[in-house]
Image 1: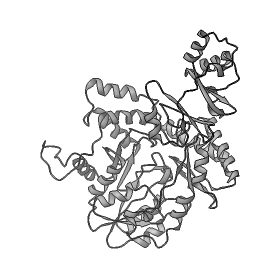
Image 2 (image 1 turned 30 degrees about the vertical axis):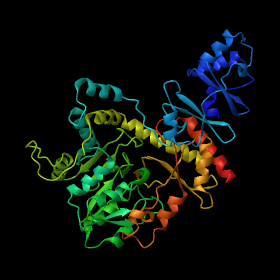
Image 3 (image 1 turned 90 degrees about the vertical axis):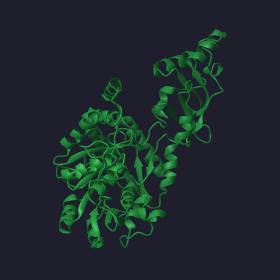
Image 4 (image 1 turned 60 degrees about the vertical axis):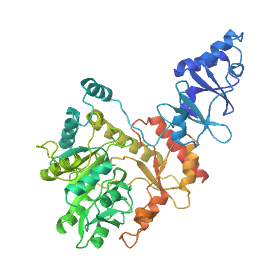
Length: 478
């Protein structure tokens, strides 16, 4: 409750005291409680009207509050919360089953502490406004080239191609490298479905590989067992910001003459021995969805070591059209372009990336200090020696006898949104029949026991402390 104490007052407090709370929080409203139960709201308008009716500043706020108010259950889906907002209703109290106020939703954030949200604190508005004022709002414009240039500067020896999202980045990477029907691509069993779907888009065959129990990334020793004469590529995923064992992985790919395609959607800024993720293989892909380390709303980037592959990707991205002969199509392509508006946001985000990454590392350090040795948590996020773990999502592993889903429900009652780990690919209907490692025990265990905590760069120190305290409290009750 202390996390939004500036918005609440007890029903026996005076109108004068309530006016002070409303004035100091700057929101024009406060929520009236009776032993934690939400019984009314009091806006500055409610208080003025009460005084005009003849009440005095010493009357209790319960005499002036509005008892006819809108509240929603704290378990409400984000969609319902967004639909409830209106021009007049911009802040909504969220209550538990007993009517206790446990969270506040406003038009900026549907939960008091979301798992992830973007921070648009740089020159995003300035650059987007520039696009609008100059009429360069589609996929043509200077910000697209600037965004690609900034990525190339950050990822030496790689050639950047902006695309509309991270999934099509994977698709383009595979197509530009010639992956197609009859080819096998080894992917980790624990990852978001976009990784395996992109392989299937190319009519290639995915092969599901077990993950390392410490890093949660693809197991290099297991890869060796899965390589056949049909294997053409390995697609490691740097899960949640943890970088894979790239030196060993690159050696395996070189020995077997396989393409190495890094899925860096969650690992912008991660590195291995000071070599940044996305520069180890033949190609790498990034996502800029709204919850990623940097965001353009939707958007992606694909990098290639071979400039000819990058050239082919640009052609495929633009309907298969020849770059030198307008409306002449060299092949069947796609509309996978990023708009100048989105790229403008990306440029502004990249300008602040060192600050963003530093905040991510700081958040992880704070969590580590607060959660080390806590009963009920079997493992904190593992970081390989001599690596940078960008901590896209700070994710812990619970001991097996604790119900992860029940713990998530309890944390929501504290106004804390959390997230489960991905399901193993081999368990889901579209992927059950593909070739895979003999045992996939690690991916299954982590899927059941993994819990992701709020990891936005907008998090304040007191919010991290509140999350950790609430987590420890609920773990003691499990």
